[in-house]
Length: 400
Image (cartoon, one colour):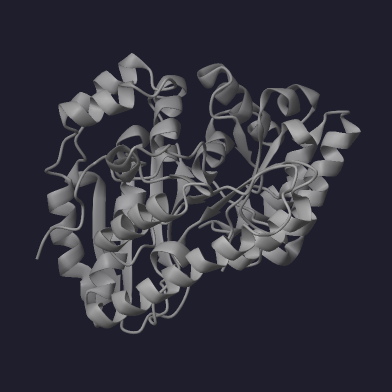
């Protein structure tokens, strides 16, 4: 069979942006990432171990091509020294190990953070594609095409609604949990062709390059989590992470992620300085309407016109959910919608809910305290409890 990974460019844009920022600010940091499946698969993922091992060997044989690095150099926020680093970069097999625990698949990447952080997205879509290769592909794709057309029809019908103050724009965020690389390619090509008025880009850098689309992404949880172990006072880790981001990108990539220790704690740190410097905020857990209202109220308290800011929603979205959120907020702020699994893995077969998260940095535990129960992840319950206490976080996000 063809290898799952087609190009080192085929990952989320925010992997490159976080990678560059950490290479410049903390090049000597160590990190540890763990794979986890949050739902019940149709068969034990442990059965995929040998295939995953083979795919990782292939991944570690790849290098960025000159054309791929030149594409990245053309993005104004990618700096020349980082592009030079990528011309030499190869994943090291010694930094990632695969094992089983009964029916469970265990994958752990540990080592210098600038060498292991890139594994995450590749591991996730390797596991996904290997998993779904055991199902009836023809039946899955046939139904997926029907469902994709339904989405297109729904958006064309929506186009007849009265125009709002801000346009509806959505992006593909589906690389990590896609049914296959071939299917994501078809989805992105179809949406770019059929709905250019709404479909504005993809987080998949390889496909953005292939189809002339805007690559989308700024930061993920791991970037802010790492600052929990970078020597600043724990209470100040978010401010330190945001400040370093501002200094790295000088006005580019201005969408901040809000739920590493919950929206309330984030807004306590997101003062007038940051609120003016960042273009907007990204939602990834908790009730999206409640989150959006909190964001707009925060901008109002700071006397910032929210119509100049953008709220990006990216938590388990479907097209109907995105449209409902658009109708609720469209006259008050700029908006964006990142749709993942329900674009690239909407088939008759239930999708896997798999993640690979940073759990340690510089030998210390780090954690995410999401606004949704079950989305938190930490290997140290004592640290998790301490983090909750420091940020006065509710108990609804206990480590699963």
